[in-house]
Image 1: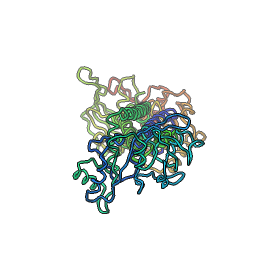
Image 2 (image 1 turned 30 degrees about the vertical axis):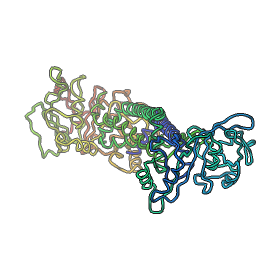
Image 3 (image 1 turned 180 degrees about the vertical axis):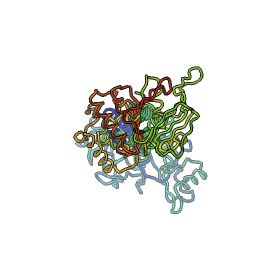
Image 4 (image 1 turned 180 degrees about the horizontal axis):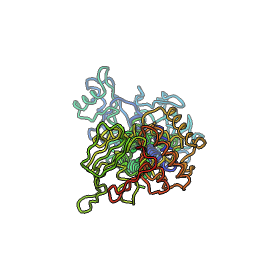
Length: 377
Length: 250
């Protein structure tokens, strides 16, 4: 009877398209909004992921990566003294003001990394050499920096501009993950970062550390916290801490959650109602099938097959459209869009739920259906 | 072979009654509860012999369709017993009744109830598909039955492209394709013109006259009375009158 079920589904073109549209819209909305949300969350962690260090040490009351709570310079040595630390280096991180050649100002995220090891440098260099950061006035800027500070025609290797009235020179162009605040990343050495930023008693933003072989980053973070009282987090822990802070302190989670919920409800409502109408309008036919000898179980299987068939097609089309949106609107990192497999699995589960509930309403109707209705003219 | 109708609820069923296709005794059925309870069947006995075409006639509300539904096992009676092919159908579980209908009964409905998105041949093949017959074989058998009814040229037509008579022939083909022993027909000519109705009932009559087959037709259509071996007149939930046709099997 699978054949009959599918013919019934595809044969009623209007209802089939209505169902498909509802499920596609629902899938697309959830995937699109979910991907943008996760893209934003990824951007929010870019301050951590762009640096690529196993353990981050900072003030124990830190909330998130962009909330800088400066440490004493001696903190680096304190961390180095903890057993299980292979290396520990300082990191400067802060928002500064860059003055362009044309006189305009642009805010930048300045990152100062230790000159000798260059630990904390970006993963990918597009032009130039990152080692040239050790040369005088040297900075590396990311692709967003090139765009914001004047475009590729004005910003290239050798270009100079000012940070807080200190002249700097571009020696490398690097690729980074965009930040939540959308500031360009500018890398320089730790010492130069201190020299171009306003005078403060404490300027050390973070201490980056790595465990010796045999000690996990989690274990090292625990030891540092216990032995020094400082806040110490693995890269992943710090990332989640940042995400949690954003969800708790901004309306982003509620906004995206509401839209995703709306997509779910709309999908559920459209498909549930259409499926129910489809069943109700075909009640005499289903009654006839029951009278002829189709069991309720057989009819239930037919309904489930119809539901999951249109659900699968709707899922495919919806994910396809959302992906297309991500590829076009989000190309070049203009839009935070990160479509991950857990999201796709989650949407598939949501759609499965929509299809199951929609089917269950119809199946309940069919289970109660008396085949004797077919004899009532 | 013989046939009998009585209104004696005390009458007993003959368990060894191989000549009888259907035996019903003391069927009572009411709808509603309490003060609104309406008795529809008030103790009906009915026998249908093999090779018999039985017409159930009577005014609306006399209980014809309810009786047909109870005999088919798609409506529970309050009291009484029905045996079809020796099987006490009211004692079967729901799933057993469903299986029994699938294997032994054929249905023709006043409104045809063809699936609108299935072609004529697909509609006719439905009972075989329900039985799990492979699609190819089911379609081949349905095609043969439709062709024997003069529908060989209309196999691929959807119901909305068929005339009333053609739709009813598809419905008959659907009822016959599973080779049922008992055909239950509810007003099969109600929506047909005189000539088409006459031809359809002639086909039903020919089927019913085959050995080991039987046909029960609920009808208001006096034009087809000539085809009945017996005509049972129902009135107010009871058998009011029995009229024997010229071709009665006994």
